[in-house]
Image 1 (cartoon, one colour):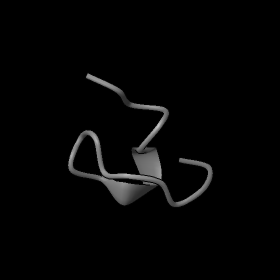
Image 2 (tube, rainbow, N blue to C red):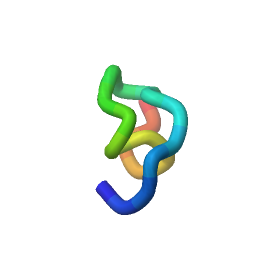
Image 3 (cartoon, rainbow, N blue to C red):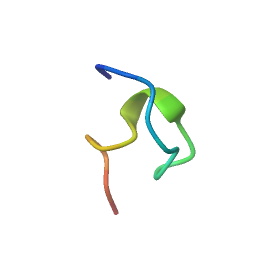
Length: 20
């Protein structure tokens, strides 16, 4: 939701923010 990181939750925008 901040910067483009690795798509953990399938979303590149919620990468490091939405870790499973």
